Length: 134
Image 1 (cartoon, rainbow, N blue to C red):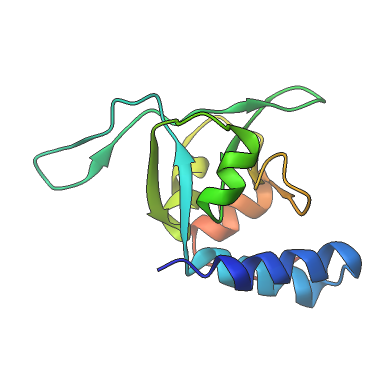
Image 2 (spheres, rainbow, N blue to C red):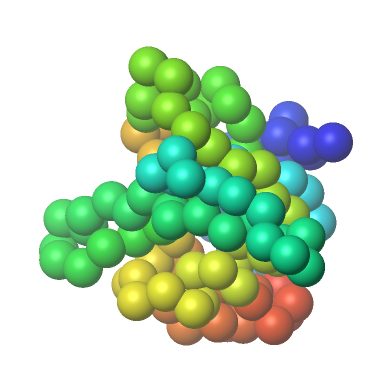
């Protein structure tokens, strides 16, 4: 089950009054909840039971690309109002996926009021399960 309301509240608090402790709380929540990722529609299960898919990325304004992840289907719909193929993954798995890709960042709840960006250095730490804000 998604902890979307908890994450959304933590992101809102972080945006309004940023501190390293509040950032760590957002990271902890993201690691332990389900997130949605947009795919190209070819998701399939392999022989080992793992889901294989091609994730959709977005262009960053300063160059490079980012993996957008969403804490709820509502946030996803704010970015893409039409139905798009998605997969739901544990947050830690999403960070590991982003770490294995050539992306500069993860964007959380892209195009939503309370959104965020996690740069590559933090993505690497989160993929290892470390929620410490540096």
